[in-house]
Amino acid sequence: MRFPDLFLVACVAVTGLATQVLASPLPPPLARWPEHPQTAWTATLPAAQAETLRRFYALGPAGLRWFDAEGRARPVLAEALSLLAAAEDDGLRPDDYQAAELARAAEAVRAATPGPGASAALPALDLRLSLTWLRFLRDLHLGRVDPHRHGWKRRPARGEPDLAAILHQAVEAGRLAPVVQALRPAWPAYETLRAALPTLRAQAARETPTSLPVFRPGLRPGQSHGQAAQVFERLRFLGDLPGDAPSPTDPTLYDPAWEPAVRRFQARHGLNDDGVIGPSTVAALNVPLSQRVRQVELSLERLRWMPSRPGGPLILVNVPMFRLWAYADAAGEPVLESRVIVGRSGKDATPSMMEELRYLVFRPYWNVPSGILHREELPRIEADPGSVHRLNKEVVAGPADHSPVVPFGPEALAGLRDGSLRLRQRPGPGNALGAVKFMMPNDEAIYLHDTPARSLFLRERRDFSHGCVRVQEPAALATWLLRDQPGWNAERVAAAMRDDAAPSQHVRLGRPVPVALVYFTAWAEAPAALLRFAADVYQRDAPLARALEQRRLD
Image 1 (tube, rainbow, N blue to C red):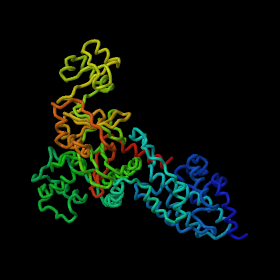
Image 2: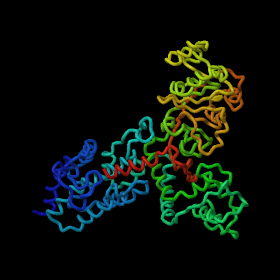
Image 3: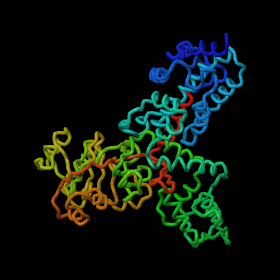
Image 4: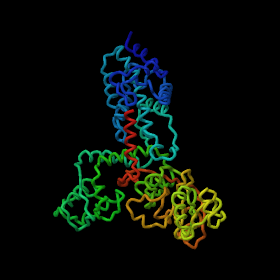
């Protein structure tokens, strides 16, 4: 029997998912596979993966996909292996897709003497290539772990594409790169972070450990310290100072000439950019670049969980950076930036979610949530009943703004305890929501709002709320949101926020604006923006890194 005949006999079963091959052990070059090491490699293949693989082979003619009828590798195979080897460009691991092993197996098949042994190995290799590519495309598009377990309160509303059809069309066309690009998240920050990753990795490989001392109370421009030169060298290495910046003539002086570089570094790392090299600035300078690389990789993973980027206006709040950006369109620079205060680490952490901002309320009532009522308000009231009137609060019977007020006393207090009555704070200078709130109805009762506690915005770490997001520039945000509403401008917004304005004025937006509450410890707010880094305020990076490593080993 001729070799092509042997080849066709060996791959006949592939058309129907090659049941016999799928139940057989892998050839030695492919015996190590992250899901099923040293086992019959599809014995526990998840049903969904098996069905996608079956559909992929059912879409085309009987036979293999990566090899022709003569057993020769099709030209697309070289591109497939090259793209798997470059998975790290997207913050993925080539080892997770056995890029090197598959390349060696393909080379072994190419170099093998034609015959029954060579032809018998091809179906298993073809199936492995197909399964790997289906997995790679899914990981690239949707991520590798369940977002629910890592901060998302609800699963992103983005369905899984028909990967079997997508891969079939790409293989038939002989071009995989366009498919890879199309399945990457379409958020501008993804491409910015992805483009920065090779340079950051190269820097990390050249880096020598840095351990700057803490300058107490802080090193100011013009002051001297024996290790001031180390700060200069670190800033030059990180790129905040130009690479050709001349070394200081006095190695002990914090030269005011490089104060702008200190401020730039501070701004990139979410610190108060005051030019003073204090403890938080030193801590950020001492972070190794290998950790920054990991932060970028984790941010790329989190971007894969995101719903598709809306094409129009968007408000984005990056929780660990304590920042809000508003965008007029998908590709542009932010038109508004504001500091924010987010939920306290722990049970009050601000969730990651994407909702639609639908209306504003000027001079709102603050309806005290049940949890806050029982944890904080009732103990305060019981210890100091006069605080109800002193803090401009009242008890009401019903959920609406016009609900009847109940005189405060023992019966009202009992109603608060059993939930039949509500506590709220009237509009006014001390109202916890300030002069405006921005409502995006959701199951978590999370929204954006003003605050009377303005001094907290001066802090570097700003996780002080019960979960909602306090905005430093609420008037600017309201003006931007209402810019297309007839009769609304900055002056009218200011008037609506004044203490003498009518309480609880609801203004519905003509068109809802998406709000993304996200958690990225590495970020770039615009396509050409500098990389920003933040401390892991909710301690979510390490659990995500462990989950990705465990997924690799399972």
